[in-house]
Length: 124
Ligand SMILES: [Zn+2]
Image 1 (cartoon, helix red, strand yellow):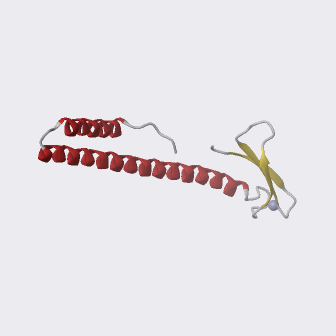
Image 2: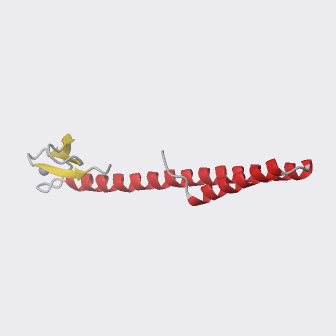
Image 3: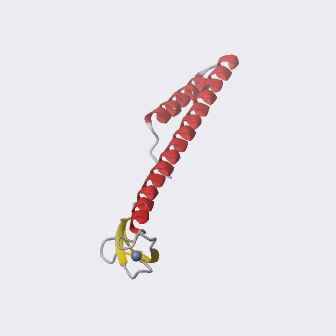
């Protein structure tokens, strides 16, 4: 998944770069080491923020997928009960709508002879 670096991650990288510059200017080895450690901490924090956000993006994608899927299943459950006799109907075909890109046409038949078609909007 591609996503723009958010402000918090950018901030961490900017602070890491600042620490690196300070370390390079520093003459005293102990101070140089301290600034390099600070740089490492900012880099680790940036990576941690990035990881947290990618997990949260993934989580919301999964939730949204499941919600959409649930809507489709509810439509299909309603359509699968025969309005004439109340028995369950059989799904005989499902195919993309010929003109509307994100709609499928589901066809059901019942043993009593009743048939029905229903549209299900496909979320992309
Ligand atoms: Zn029927």
